[in-house]
Image (cartoon, rainbow, N blue to C red; front, side):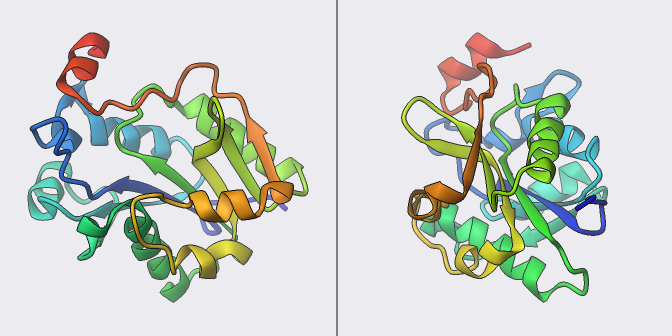
Length: 197
């Protein structure tokens, strides 16, 4: 299938309070933008409709980022990453658009670039798997592409394990991609200062 921005949704998860950082991580400066602004710019290079899931300090984030993307408010953000995925996918299911795939990415992986994001989308387009995920040391994870057949399961997630349970239960339907060192999460002040560009 050839995907267009009418049937690809990108969910950027940006709802957490960044307790380990001790600051509103989403709006920390990164390059000429912020961590979240960088993620949005990367996503904007793809033929997709972009959604940002917000929770903690959602009003402030919306004010800072502006109207270039559609925001989804996750009132259950304290329940963790799974609840943010569920909130975003519930929005997709309720949408008038018939999204065929959903790309899930984080606001705090600034080395994920447009080339890599397009690579996983194009790989997904070419293979016959329902999930295309990023390879980590002993697991797979985000950024990850899910076919719409997984939307119902994703919409029921909760807790802080993200989509881990869905990935582990369907490994025979997963194509994994080597990110070549691009998956560093910025979770602490030390990581932020060390990697600030």
